Length: 275
Image (cartoon, rainbow, N blue to C red):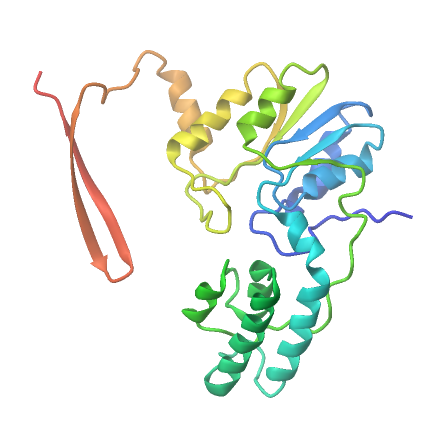
């Protein structure tokens, strides 16, 4: 019998495991046979749950971040983890990996890097501080490593994406393909405003977050955000001040680059009008 996952089988920043049970309740509002389009597919958890709960529905999973590749690389990931367990066997849990042990860890991973694809995000959860992620070998080289190596292999999950229509494209392109399809519901789970989006393949500015809102008008959707984001407060303000427009239109802008320390930089801006 096919397994229902309530959390993604591999680590993914921003997966909706805490909302999984509530998401299932919301899905019951829509009949089986509805078309569901997961615009920001991420770990595929929302798509997986939707297909499991609505087996006769078409569920489109937008794998823009390459989660499928990480699933396919599971056998290699488990091999790497087995070697890392041996290397770190004498290092206390949650303590830094230093000296020769660190060199051996990096050498092990680099060996597999030369052979092909390495899932750095999954490995990060075993050798980096909690909630810290590397996306390439260079990231690991400049990071402090910790012994959080997973004690067991990750289980195979070949049925996780079973039955899904999988694509990988810009969410606007996918929205354009399905916006006129009858009985369509969009899952809208973009990287949150004002939160770290470092493991995503796209770089998000404020305008990008606001652009997402254009897909909501006139369509059925399930939208995700958090109290770390000010997007709902911003939309509420815009709704109450509809005539403000852009107060900075036709302003002149002056920018000055500033630096607080070796790793923290920012840009000061000044905007002005003469009349």
